[in-house]
Every structure is written in C-alpha cells, then in structure tokens.
Image (cartoon, rainbow, N blue to C red):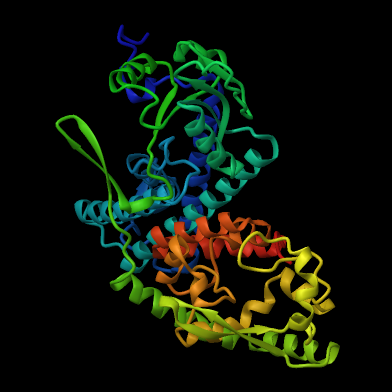
Length: 493
C-alpha cells in the first residue's frame, strides 16, 4: 500500500491509470524485441568473424557442456544490453514512441555499452578481438534502432486506426487556450494524445455560448472528474488557468493515482535543444534560446547536401534519362521546365524540374483563376487540365522534382528546407520572410504533413517551425518520412 501522502515507495510501485496500461504492455514488447535484436546482433557478428571467440577458446561452464563464449554471446550481451537500455531511460514512459528522444537514449545506451564491454574485458583480463567488440556495438545499435522504428510505426498505426494506445487528456484552462491545444494535439492522431473533455476555471458569462468538439465541464474537482472520464492525463493550458498554489496542490492530489500532469507553456512551435528549464529559488524558468542557423552544423549540412546530390545524380542517371525520353515521346516541347524562384536571403535562382504541363500552361492560367483551390500565394487545382497524362504520374511520385538535385549540387537548394515558391521577393513580407533564412529544399515539413492538401497558413507555420528548430537530426527524420509519404501519394497533384 502507498504511504499516506500518496507517493509510491519505489519507481516500480508507481500505479498506472486504468487507460494507460498499454504503456506497460508496449514496454514489455520492446524488452522482448530488444533482447531478440541483441541476440541477432551477436549471431551476426559470430557469423561474420572467424575469431569472434578470441579470449574464450578454452573456457567451459555448466560442467563443460557450454562454452563461456556462447553463454556470453547469447545471454550475457543481451541481458547487459537490456540493463543499460533501462538505465539510460530507453523504457521511460515519457520517451516511448515520441520524437527523437527515445532514439537518443538508445544511442546513449550504446555508448555506455561500449564502455561497459571494454571495462569488463579489462577487468576479467580477456584478450577479446577489437573488431568483434566494435562490430557487436554497431550491430546492437543498428538492430535495436530498426526494431524501435518498426514498433513505433506499428504503435502510430494502431493510434490512427482505432485510437487505442493513446493518452486520454482532460484540458484545463480558458476555452480559447484549451481549443488551441485541442487543435494542435488532434492534428496528428499518431502522436498519442486524445482530448476527451475541457474543464473551464470559471462559468461562462451570461448569454455566452460555448462551442467545443468535446464535452465542457465547469466547477468540478479535477481529480474526481478525470477519474470519472477514465482519462490518464491533465493538461493545464495557459498561464491563467490555475494559480500557482492551485497547480502545486493539484500535483499533490495526483500523487499515487497514476495520472500525469502536463503544463502547456505559451511558447509554441519551439522544440528540442532550444528549450531549457532553469530553476531559480524554486521558480522554474523556461529558457528559450535563439535558433542556430550557422556554424559547423550548417557547414556539415551543406557538405552532406552536395555529396548526396552528386551521388543521387550518378545513381539515378538512368531513371532521369528514362523520364526525359518518356516526356519527349509523349508530348512535344522541352523536357525540362525552368522557373525563377526565391531562395536563401531573397536571392532568385532558376529551379530545375521535369515538365509536367503542356507548353501553353502559362497562357491558360488566367482562365482557370476562378478554380484556384489554394488560399495563399500559389495556384493549386486538383484536376488541373494543363497537366499532361505522364505529368500526373510524375507529380504523384514527386519524380518531377529529381532534377532539383542539380540546384542542390550548385548550392542554391538543400535536400531539406522550405519549398521555393514561384513568387517575387516583395511577396515575402512579415513572418513569411523568415522562410528565406535557410536554403529552400526538395522536401520539407509541409511535404510530409499533407503537401497540396494543406492551407497556406499551415504551410507557412510548418516552414517557420522548421526554420526555428532546424538540426541535422531533424533533417534525417524528414527525409525518412518523405519516402513513406511519396509512396502513399498523399496530397500530390
């Protein structure tokens, strides 16, 4: 039984809310998968290296029935790996299935594993093969990351299909703040947050109508309400939602219930290393650092872009030639389409694309203005009659964008970044101009978030989010998700 103040005596005794037991089941599945990954890594190394058992040749255990190397490779390494993963927080419920934090903890565990294996080999005076140790460390990382990604994809698919394995959230705060949070967390069902109700701190004014997509409560005690709703998370939205002493009292009341308490700051679209909590005399200060778009990371991004572009042009050369011939033989006119775009720091450049429209597309544009489906600077039409038959297939798979690797090689574009728009520099005013702080990209956040189905406001918001939170790891994540989005053909027209 928990003590009188509700706090469990150990971390293992922490209760779980009724609807959040999926976390333990998911963590248990990860433990099994990580163990299998570790065994697979060991078996792979044994198969690849003839001298993998160096240092264990004459050692036998269990009455001579089993070699010490087989026991270490098939049981010792996997169990040590699980222990280090747990110590690095790779099974922490706050990191599972979210962003890059889970994978960062796996990487930290891998570094700790390398140190642990080296220390044990030194302590037991085993002259093990250095190549074997390096291979097992790399194998553990690769296999574990693969199974974690597969598990995460499966979890997100479950959340999108039947809304299971999600946190049921009670939003607490003023209606405007709560609705803003509701819009953000429901934008992506795979994130695992599902608002079930809103609790207002005050009754609405006389005659004021309350319209919300979920039930709205007023005047309830929060703990009984969240238990009645069978929710597992309370999200306090906005600074005026609860007084400081009320928030502290609520945290005390939730001890021992298994219910999470989340405070939503007013700072939005700022993530990652830019945010730090700096406590001063018991006051938690949220320190927001300015975005870093320079230095060694930017130089590395530029080098990676150009090397990848050169490699891509060489490898995809036959594909590019095939597409060019298909365009030439199916429709008269040039194979390539070049148009002026606004790039980094407002500098104009000519973008390379395969032509997907008839040659008189520009002349026919004015007649189609009334059918524009976009609310921003671009003209978008789902069934645009100016697009050629082969152009529709190229657009669906984004193959028309491949020649932009030339722009990347020339330093005018990047693999990842905001899309370059066919507009004038004067059109970039106000917040939109922040898009020009980085090089435009072949792919970006808006491509993996809906592409042409997005509103102009959402596209700008995603581009600004990328500019404010850019990192090399972020770029890799976007590239990975781009492959899936392109294959699904979502929002491409």
